[in-house]
Amino acid sequence: MSDLFAAAGFESDAPRPLADRLRPTRLTDVVGQDHLVGPDGTLARMLRSGRVGSLVFWGPPGTGKTTVARLLSRETDLHFEQVSAIHTGVAELKKLFDGACGRRRIGKGTLLFVDEIHRFNKAQQDSFLPVMEDGTVTLIGATTENPSFELNAALLSRAQVLVFRPLDEAAVAQLLARAEEVEGRALPLDAEARAVLVRMADGDGRASLTLAEEVWRAAGDGEVFDAVRLQEILQRRAPIYDKSDDGHYNVISALHKAVRGSDPDAALYYLCRMLDAGEDPLFVARRLVRMAVEDIGLADPQALVICNAAKDAYHFLGSPEGELALAQAAIYIATAPKSNAAYLAYKAAMRTAKEGGSLVPPKHILNAPTKLMKSEGYGSGYRYDHDEPDAFSGQDYFPEALGRQQFYRPTPRGFEKILGDRLARWAELRATRRRD
Image (cartoon, rainbow, N blue to C red; front, side):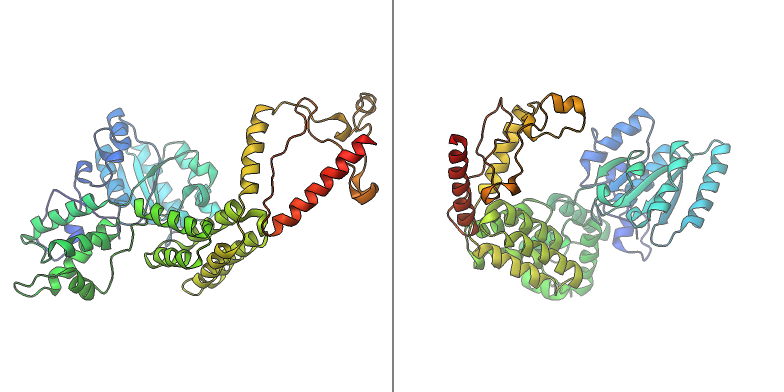
C-alpha cells in the first residue's frame, strides 16, 4: 500500500479507504514535509531547475514517500513504474529496464519507484547502476532503514538521500480536519480524545486516517467519545512519548541520568516507558553500551561486556523476551561503580593529538627495517619490557617535543582502584629507574 497522508483535491465518494480518497493530487497538497515540497524545499528547487535525479526517500511509514514519487512522475512527465523489493527479482528488473530502454528510444523517460529498496541484495542493487548512469531510469527508492547501512555505497553515490520526517501533531491535525471536510461531519471526540487520537497516529499520516475511520464506524448517533472510551474502542493507547521528537530525547536522557545517578528503579521505569511506547529496542541497547563506556568505564570493565551481551541476546530472542536482557543490563550498569575517567582521558588525549599530530615518536621505539634507519638511531636503546624486572622498563614513549603527559586518572572506585594502585607502582618504578 502506498504512503498516503494528505489531499486537497477530493474525488468521488466511491467506497474506498479514507486515506485513498485523500490522496494528494499536487506536491503542494502534501503536509508535514515542507523541507522537501515547500516553496524552498529540496524537491521544489529540483523541479524549478528542470531536472530531477535519482533519489532515495528515507523515512518511517505513512510519511508520503510513495505519494511524492507518483507526483514527481507527473511533474516531470516521466513514465511511472512501481515495484516492491519484496516481490521483485533480477529477472523482473531486467524486463523493467528493457521497457525503459524502449521508451528512451522514443524520447520518453522512466521514473522507477522501488518500495523497500533496502530488501534488495547486493546483486540486485548493483543491477541498477548502469541504467542510472546512462539515464535509462530515474530511480526513486523508498526505505524505512538507514541507507548508510542498508544500501550499497555505489548506489548511494548515484542518488541523493532525502529524509521524510514523521508527521508532527500539527500535520496530523491538518489531515484530520481534511478528513472531516470530505466526510462532511466532525469526529465524535472531545478535545482531549482528539489530542489522544493525534498521538496514537505516532507520526504516521495513513494511520491517523485509518483510526479516524474506525472512530466514525464505532460512534452511535450523537455519541461523543472521551479519551478513555476512545482507547477502549480502538484497543490501543497513545504513545507515552513521541519516539521521533523531543519526548524521545527527553526520556532517553532521563534513563542515562538515572543510570549515572545509580538509581536502578528509575532506570527501569524509563527503559520500560520507551519499550512500551514502541521505541526500537536496539536503539535502547546502543544507548546502554554508550552509558557503560562513558559513565562506568574501567570502574567495572564487565559493564561493557554485559551491555553488548544484552544487545546480542535481544538479537537472538527478539521481542518481548529479549527486552528482559536490556532490563538486566540497565540494572547492572545503574548499580555498578561509576567513573568517567576513561571518557575524560580520551577527550584530553584527542585534544593533544590534534594539537601535536605531526610530532615524531622517539626513535628508540621505532623499528629499524633498513641499515640506513638503524644508522640514524631508529630502535637504538629500546628495552624489551618482558626482559626487565617486573616486566616494566620505565621508558618514555611520548614524542620528545611533547614530554610526558597524563590523561587517564582512575577513580578510587571499583576496578579502577586496582588500576590506580598499579599505575602508582609503575610511576615509582619509572622514577627509580630514571635515577639509576
